[in-house]
Image 1: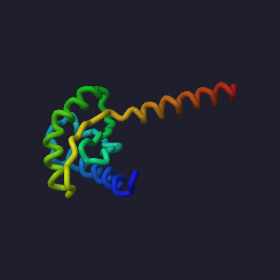
Image 2: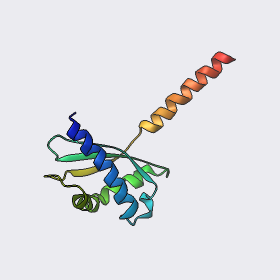
Image 3: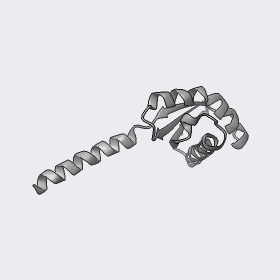
Length: 114
Protein backbone atom coordinates (compact mmCIF):
# COMPACT_ATOMS: atom_id res chain seq x y z
CA UNK A 1 0.00 0.00 0.00
CA UNK A 2 1.26 3.47 -0.76
CA UNK A 3 2.40 5.95 1.82
CA UNK A 4 -0.40 8.30 0.78
CA UNK A 5 -3.07 5.65 1.45
CA UNK A 6 -1.46 4.78 4.79
CA UNK A 7 -1.61 8.43 5.81
CA UNK A 8 -5.21 8.69 4.65
CA UNK A 9 -6.17 5.57 6.63
CA UNK A 10 -4.54 7.01 9.75
CA UNK A 11 -6.25 10.36 9.20
CA UNK A 12 -9.64 8.64 8.87
CA UNK A 13 -9.09 6.76 12.15
CA UNK A 14 -8.19 10.00 13.93
CA UNK A 15 -11.01 12.12 12.50
CA UNK A 16 -13.75 9.51 12.84
CA UNK A 17 -12.71 9.00 16.47
CA UNK A 18 -13.07 12.75 17.01
CA UNK A 19 -16.48 12.79 15.33
CA UNK A 20 -17.75 9.90 17.45
CA UNK A 21 -16.49 11.52 20.62
CA UNK A 22 -17.59 15.11 19.91
CA UNK A 23 -20.41 15.16 17.36
CA UNK A 24 -22.45 11.95 17.58
CA UNK A 25 -25.09 12.24 20.31
CA UNK A 26 -25.95 8.54 20.61
CA UNK A 27 -24.83 7.14 23.98
CA UNK A 28 -24.21 3.69 22.43
CA UNK A 29 -21.13 4.91 20.56
CA UNK A 30 -19.41 6.88 23.32
CA UNK A 31 -17.22 3.92 24.31
CA UNK A 32 -16.29 2.92 20.78
CA UNK A 33 -12.64 2.87 19.74
CA UNK A 34 -11.74 3.09 16.08
CA UNK A 35 -8.85 0.67 15.52
CA UNK A 36 -8.21 0.76 11.77
CA UNK A 37 -9.42 2.01 8.41
CA UNK A 38 -9.01 0.36 5.02
CA UNK A 39 -9.78 2.64 2.08
CA UNK A 40 -9.85 1.31 -1.47
CA UNK A 41 -7.39 2.81 -3.94
CA UNK A 42 -10.15 4.44 -5.97
CA UNK A 43 -11.57 6.10 -2.82
CA UNK A 44 -14.98 4.54 -3.36
CA UNK A 45 -15.24 2.52 -0.17
CA UNK A 46 -13.84 2.65 3.36
CA UNK A 47 -14.09 -0.15 5.89
CA UNK A 48 -13.74 1.23 9.41
CA UNK A 49 -12.86 -1.23 12.17
CA UNK A 50 -13.94 -0.60 15.77
CA UNK A 51 -13.96 -2.19 19.21
CA UNK A 52 -16.15 -1.43 22.18
CA UNK A 53 -16.36 -2.07 25.89
CA UNK A 54 -20.05 -2.86 25.46
CA UNK A 55 -20.92 -6.50 24.87
CA UNK A 56 -23.67 -5.83 22.32
CA UNK A 57 -21.43 -5.57 19.26
CA UNK A 58 -24.23 -6.09 16.73
CA UNK A 59 -26.26 -3.19 18.12
CA UNK A 60 -23.28 -0.86 18.07
CA UNK A 61 -22.35 -1.92 14.54
CA UNK A 62 -25.92 -1.23 13.37
CA UNK A 63 -25.93 2.14 15.14
CA UNK A 64 -22.63 3.16 13.53
CA UNK A 65 -23.74 2.03 10.06
CA UNK A 66 -27.02 3.93 10.47
CA UNK A 67 -25.04 7.05 11.40
CA UNK A 68 -22.50 6.57 8.61
CA UNK A 69 -24.05 9.24 6.36
CA UNK A 70 -23.80 11.82 9.18
CA UNK A 71 -20.25 10.72 9.97
CA UNK A 72 -19.33 10.87 6.27
CA UNK A 73 -20.74 14.39 5.84
CA UNK A 74 -18.94 15.60 8.97
CA UNK A 75 -15.76 13.92 7.75
CA UNK A 76 -16.08 15.83 4.45
CA UNK A 77 -15.72 19.06 6.42
CA UNK A 78 -12.61 17.86 8.25
CA UNK A 79 -10.71 16.00 5.50
CA UNK A 80 -10.05 17.49 2.08
CA UNK A 81 -9.89 14.73 -0.53
CA UNK A 82 -11.22 14.63 -4.06
CA UNK A 83 -13.82 11.96 -3.34
CA UNK A 84 -15.20 10.93 0.05
CA UNK A 85 -15.65 7.15 0.18
CA UNK A 86 -18.75 5.32 1.38
CA UNK A 87 -18.18 4.28 4.99
CA UNK A 88 -18.99 0.88 6.44
CA UNK A 89 -18.26 -0.07 10.06
CA UNK A 90 -17.07 -3.56 11.00
CA UNK A 91 -16.35 -4.94 14.46
CA UNK A 92 -12.62 -5.65 14.86
CA UNK A 93 -12.27 -9.20 16.17
CA UNK A 94 -8.47 -9.18 16.15
CA UNK A 95 -8.29 -8.11 19.82
CA UNK A 96 -10.52 -10.98 20.93
CA UNK A 97 -8.49 -13.35 18.77
CA UNK A 98 -5.29 -12.06 20.38
CA UNK A 99 -6.72 -12.59 23.86
CA UNK A 100 -7.73 -16.12 22.92
CA UNK A 101 -4.22 -16.92 21.65
CA UNK A 102 -2.68 -15.35 24.75
CA UNK A 103 -4.90 -17.54 26.95
CA UNK A 104 -3.86 -20.66 25.06
CA UNK A 105 -0.16 -19.79 25.41
CA UNK A 106 -0.60 -19.07 29.11
CA UNK A 107 -2.41 -22.40 29.62
CA UNK A 108 0.39 -24.27 27.79
CA UNK A 109 3.04 -22.55 29.92
CA UNK A 110 1.16 -23.44 33.12
CA UNK A 111 0.92 -27.08 32.01
CA UNK A 112 4.69 -27.18 31.34
CA UNK A 113 5.43 -25.80 34.80
CA UNK A 114 3.25 -28.40 36.52
